Image (cartoon, rainbow, N blue to C red):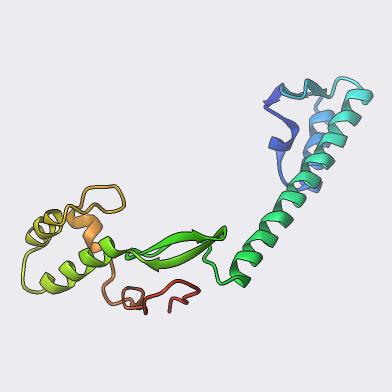
Length: 169
């Protein structure tokens, strides 16, 4: 049996599990071939050692990347920036490289139309009113289904204007 992978890092994230898996592969006299690295595990001790080193290197590279990302997220939050998805009605704008949240003028207009007509008109009539604004739902055409996903009771539609950190309740 041959297990074919693009590179050794694709075998897993936990070194203990990957090394355990490689041990089982060796016991069963099977092979793992890492195509991009031109390595074969299970053929010789020298090649096996090269794979073991690659497993450790891949974990180290992953840990470094994770630490950099964690530090970047912390720096953004410490600077009052926003990380993650933005609720409908809001958008992000980079200021000095920091994504800041602010009201989306066009999306706020759509929210006002929905609130205004929600109890007075049919959903289809509301969609027609939104289409008159020439607005899309973040690039998609407005439908009753995606209109119903906007929770008008959430306070993210009523947050005070301005750019900076805003907590969503």
